[in-house]
Image (cartoon, rainbow, N blue to C red; front, side, top):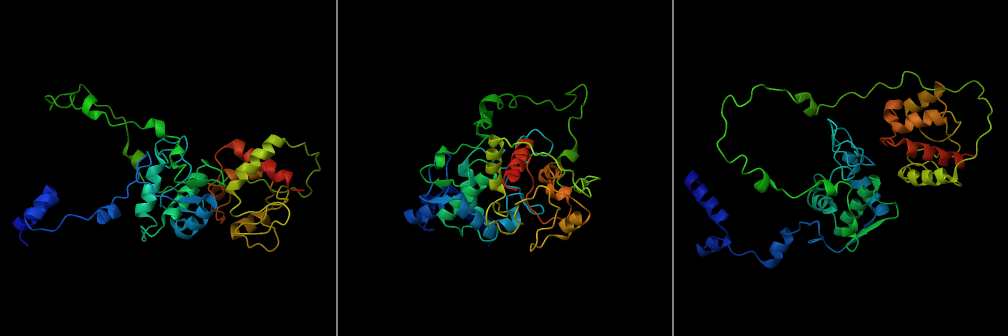
Length: 337
């Protein structure tokens, strides 16, 4: 096709279906054909299909379809996008933009998953599966509880934390007039000031921070101490935080090893010593070197597991709030007898 004919065809396409049909080109799209493509979801719920999905189901679907890129808990694998966390990072040089820290509307989350995910097999998920995955992504961002079910009816009730920091584009009123006059082309400033550096935009992965030079190790004979009474409120808060861990770890009566070891009696235990569980070489080595799980060592480990024990197969990225760490340790103490 010549360049002229290509441009003519493009012009007809841009002119619209009425002109094209008048010239005997194509036909008007049928309502069903339009509906098949008109799948965008609006913040007010317009376009949202009927359906429902809960966190537990979403975790299973996510593990099968999404975790290979995004990690079991949305922490990301290699350089694929992280889906969880990022709170209080938007003013930093390297903001972490997730639905828990940045995105304004849940409709955007549903719409994107529906159109583009999973990678390499887009549009293969049913409406209920998209609801379930969306519910799970809310859960890993601490926005809903583990028993939450996202439905067509309650969808618009979910407000993301950063919604109020988005506003309608007002540049036609506030900026257009300013930049529509005569523009200065030379000697426009008395001096030039550098306000940013290119390194702030660098996306090259940096090496992890060095692990702590010293890890607390077990004494030959731990001193016997009187264990103070646990705060019931703190234990209850810890039980809620522990929901992040239940996918891999069990506690309580009848607890068994899963993808992670059971955590009964973890306080005071040497790392990597649960019988019958296959630990990573790094964890087994740390235990061989005498690493004992105390309140202090658990706090450091739970803050950033893969930095504290390099090579651990635990994929959980860590807890950012010291209050959450203290609570979960109290909870583990309450069932460690």
